[in-house]
Length: 397
Ligand SMILES: [Zn+2]
Image (cartoon, rainbow, N blue to C red; front, side):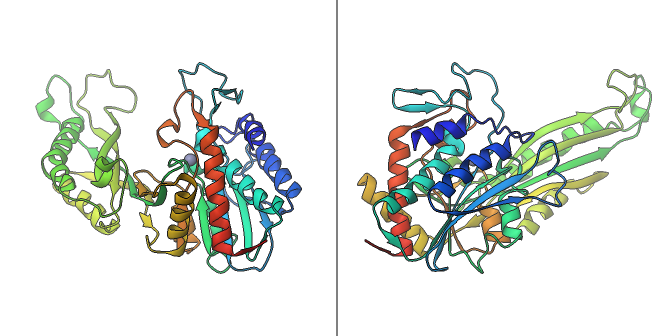
């Protein structure tokens, strides 16, 4: 398992732009085939991001028993860019002091290795599973997952018509089970002003001043309202149990350049509003429109991700919890993620009701320099996945 993980970490599947997806998908497919799976490659035909230079190719393996129940393990093969501050080779897959270092070790190639070897351990014990196991390695999670998990859901590969349970092997720490995530609304506000000579600004309308007024209005009115709302979801860290709004970027002035003797006639800003399961999106958007009243504005939606949560009393959640408990001898807390990951696609597009995230990586190391996964976590994670697989599908020795 460690050697396989090192091999896939050494393939730099950096996204953006989406490099080396094919060799990584093929290495996973080759391993699955060796372990008895039927393997299929699914290219994201018809999507603009699937190009000759950067093909978007997903891999799925199927290990059959009866068609139902069907448990699907999914992990994303893309990793974020390396960034600064590394003291080891980001694609060297160095093993030192019980850890494997490299970009993508924690987020989340360790999850892919763990689920593949969890099921292989069952097979090598000569235990027969009643249902079917699938494993997929998908692309582009870090950029929205449209050519990856969303594509598989849209094309019926991960869909309630065939799929009962989905475990996404994202890093939420080996001792916790994640049942969902919050929502995201990214939008751009553009405010118009009126150009005039910079020496006589009273003859124009400064759009940057207007944006400043809008931001102050958000501070006065929206931010206190958001701080007063709390979700019932077990979001970790707990500071993220309130909704939030963050200004991601701002640009103002004349398009030709900002050093001009003119009153700024345009200002745009991009906002990142994180919303709760308890906040309907239509309300979230209406609040922004209400705050913009009185301004000469354009509002453009850049991305909307609906929050999702699997029922805490569902079979998948309780089984994974008890499997983690059996391995670690401690009750596994349920958490929800402050950010978002491919669970939205499985549930909203694939209509699969039972989906969780569970994996051996350490959440706070995701996207960091000197990212690593602990080998004992990799092993414990795989054990918990193996137990959960047998309990969900039914097993006989
Ligand atoms: Zn991830």
